[in-house]
Image (cartoon, rainbow, N blue to C red; front, side):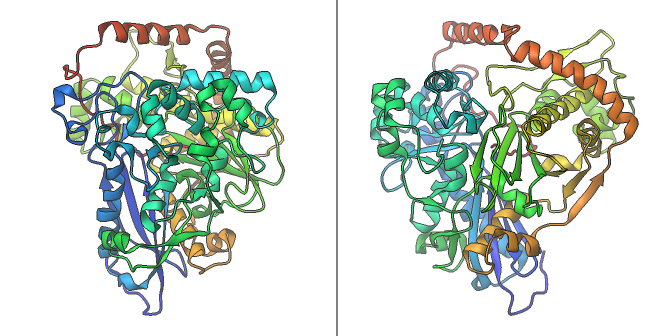
Length: 589
């Protein structure tokens, strides 16, 4: 996309690291115009069954197998985004790289990298390439649930002051649970690790040579509140060998969002084609950088970044304790306000799973004959239905529940299926289930004194107009979509502009560079009433399975794990390999 630019213009690069790929965008500083982009898909995608033989350095049949609930990635795939997507974006924009003044990145979270003191990932060391715990633990690695349960139980028992800041529960996705799992399952790898690093900070380290922890992930995922982490006494009570986890593996300089972490090194300049010495912004989370991109920097503007998962972020003027939220952090989105976060672990992932596993071939064939993707085809069929016509109700827990139950042992449910149920019926029920999950989050905020006045959607799923209208009707809120197709990358570019000194702060940069709405959806009164009836049924189902009335989901998970251990084939069995997730992009956090 070659464009005519003023010779005096300056530009910034925003790089968004998603679950399956990294995207770079070139943005003009004076007005936020996106001039070019590049995308690089991770060659190893999401590793869920066995380590990739080419990285593990062993024949495929001897690559280490992974238990259930694991999700790993290969860190060098992230470097390749800098080598490939950034130069591609510059070429697409047709600008002189010398006019670029800064670069910033965002990442899915909580995604953790075990590294040596110089930043080298453990999997790149001799003797560690075939050890699963030496690899990146992706945000959707849920195998540390047992450790999270112990952390929550002990924190509640001791009355730890930080626990209410996380709605009373911390997640298996977060730094401490994953770190404790690493210690207890591979103590040698734990001992060899010098730093337990958020990928958001690791990639910045690769760019500028400085390791700076960003305030966002430290607060939301690292239990850093009021200037401190959980105490050594608490950690020792979890496991005596975990006592010095903070002081030896985690603690480091924390950088404020929008500040510069350092300057682009000569090596990173060679990777990217950018000038050595330009500003490199402190890292951030994909969801949280999107709020400025949507110009949502004031209290009451709830931003949902919807992809394979959904993250909900919002600023508030006061500190409130919201049950089941992912966290509240002072300055977690912009300085001077409390940043709130909640989320759903599965959204686009659920839709993608269903189209791959629950839709018969004739539907795929019919979609192809019409020149449509399967999601478009099913959406078209589902949009013809009256609300409730399919007779179904679903729980959106196929990847566990992040908010408000914070329990990744939960699983999906569809109630009401008959021999007359069609794929489009189930598809619509799943769309509605994710909207009900978001409504549960909105209600939790409101009930806790954090008003939600506006609903703004970013991410890949905003293109589905039926889904957007369903969300407006279910929440009863006016809904707008961000005009940018690259919300997180644009948000990162805004942070790069601040780090480069082009704007005084994030608010000022957001006002000049943020995206205008792309679409507006107003709740339809009769739809709101119809969905209210279904939502009450959803709440009944939600509480029955999610709040202890029936723990069958937990029991089934235990049975599944036991059966897998008993029947696990030797390394290199028929199911060994790498599983790539659905094409809808994610937001973790």
